[in-house]
Amino acid sequence: MLIDIYTHIFPGTFFEQMSKAAPRLENIGKRMQAVVPVHNLKERFRQMDAYGDYKQLISLPNPPLEDIMDAETGTHLARVANDAMAEECAKHPDRFVGFAAALCMLDMDSTMEELHRAIKDLGARGVQIFTNVAGEPLDKPEYQQLFDAMAKYDLPIWMHPARGADMPDYKGEDRGRYEMWWCFGWPYETSIAMTRLVYCGMFDRHPNLKIITHHMGGMIPYFDGRVGPGMDVLGARTTDEDISGILPALKKPHAEYFKNFYADTAMFGATLGIECGMKYFGVGHTVFSTDFPFAPTAATIEAINSLELEANDLTALCSGNAERLMQL
Image 1 (cartoon, rainbow, N blue to C red):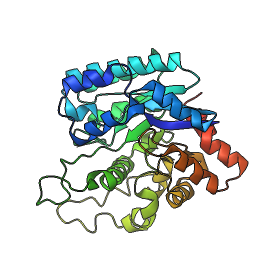
Image 2: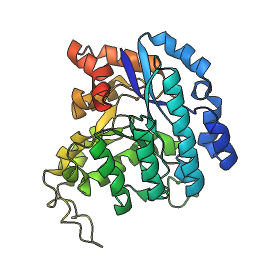
Image 3: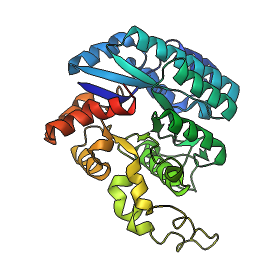
């Protein structure tokens, strides 16, 4: 069995309501409209049938609600999305193993209310957040309560990168070009968010916190030398503030904490990338994902099969780890 743990959907009337609330969705919104399986279940199921015993965990795609609307509207639309995803999961248990709840984190009181409602009342298998909240980092104190709650529930946080063309590649320009905000910006966003969570001591407070990083942990596995020994001298390159106490304040060597994260195989079928990421995080912290319907599902399956994993490891990767994480 295959459990695709990170797929995307616009359920029910959500996209229509989001479009009315935020008519300027820019590049990412236009792309979403053109991808039929993200909003058409008939076409979605037709494509899913090609992969045999294959089920999905569903979540909203980009853009983050925080980036396109105010707190009140975003909170309302998160509720709309969660109600709709819960309904689809109930209607199609043979297709969907569950959903990651949508949140709008502009008003944390409302955010926490919806988090608890989605998990307790709707049966969400966890929550999805983005790598920043309208440009604010996840290690700000006001967001700590979300991580505290998810550690208590012992359910995963899906962490999706967020960066758009409005963030330029160079400070002398007004906008990013050639979609580098997506190609390189998203892995960078993921890596920065992971590092900030490590350095703020998140895993010291919650050693068993489950965070699933999209696209195989961004840049981290491929820059392990810079992330590890390269950052042993943290603070030596900085002259305008003293950050030399960050690493000594952690209970373990900083590089070890990155292995606490989980990573998915949504790599557009890149065999070398998947293999490197799995060696870094370990089979036990790697989960099967294709990023359906925005990336090639068949190519990801072929890449995994080409690795010739042991039977137990293959089962863990394709379904066992997901079942454990989501308490299925």
